[in-house]
Length: 556
Ligand code: PEP
Ligand code: MG
Image 1: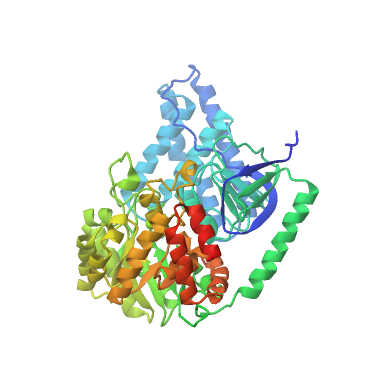
Image 2 (image 1 turned 45 degrees about the horizontal axis):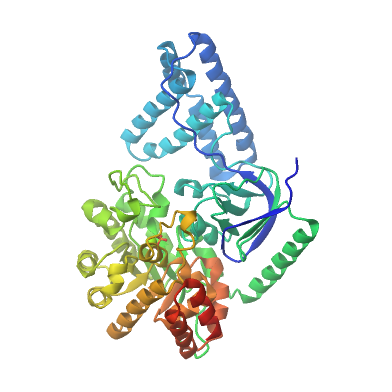
């Protein structure tokens, strides 16, 4: 039955809008219970064989439609599903009394463990094996296969939230828009959406339901999802989409062009990247360099740490896109929303307050040393201006530890991210130790307001316009100016054009963002002088809420 028109509200990511049908991502399946089967082992084996055939059929149909590396991956999954050793393992467990689901789960798990023990590159297949296992168990249960749905036509994806590993599979040509029930405006899903220029509305609430196939309008600018819109609502959205596309086309500069205020004050506009593959597009969209390369994103699926040679090749590829320009690489930020299997941490009740970022690196000196060495090697063979920084640094002692480690190896510019409020409170000491500071407003907001950035229910707190966050930025900006050292911004806040002006007024010397945001920020900066930016910043600082800070700066 068609759904009646209604509106859902969340937090918009970006300013785009999109119209299309919804597909819903199924949740991961629960682990099969240690049940035994009904007593008929042959019937149980036949059910498993039928489930495997169904999965192989679905995968083959996908492989026929796919091309390139995607096709090879699906073909490899088909081979895994049909592996005779696995089939024997499943059969033996059923003979031993296990239910089909449990036998499949255990046989795949044991094979996965063997692959992991072999180390790379075999260990990388363990995740693919887990996906095949989930598909077979889903077929046995008559449940939809978990993961991102497969479709021949573009769609709008509705998810509770994406796991970091799912985000790698998201095909921006097929996923027109994104709606999440959970997740806040600075969570990894929002970051991905911004990076791929996918209009998104996050945190619409756990209860919100939209039936698969229902047409919706996702309007990121207003944070609204119109479910089953009228023809007039669709026409209005389509008009907005066309107008915005025209506006952006006129603002995109192409090439490495310089950001500046109306009075000529230079504010380099840089890109946040997660892979060297995105570098060329960032340059096309006007990035002057890279302000944040998130090194951990390439390894979210990896079971073992990448070698120095593997890392060097990635960093060299990245740097080679920016000869003569600044590229800021962030060391692995493992933990909380971006866990790396090889940068271990014990189970933690509050991972955001746990062993993450530089804390995890200090606990694994070899991984730290290898990454620094790979960066030094890449610095030596390219002409880019490489800057390296550590995440989650709490004070000058930690800053010195990291800066010393980088300098010992011959890295030229070594700095720290400002994400923990203690670092901002000690900004003077930190800037005496580090070559530069880059403010990660996503985490700085999370920690200043004590609001987990993964929780949609707290999205009202995760607002970098909050005067408490702005005051921390000012402490860092003032200390940077006094020390004559750069203080950049690399959190999502820099992608909000009006906030970008305020951040410059607070002392930010460069802004780094998802490349699709560059054109709008460039245009906004070009309309204000440094003095005007400072006036707007002062008005925002004096406000007592994020909402009033927005209004005060707009009126100043
Ligand atoms: C930040 O915290 O603002 C930041 C840029 O780092 P990430 O979003 O990767 O945690
Ligand atoms: Mg961070």
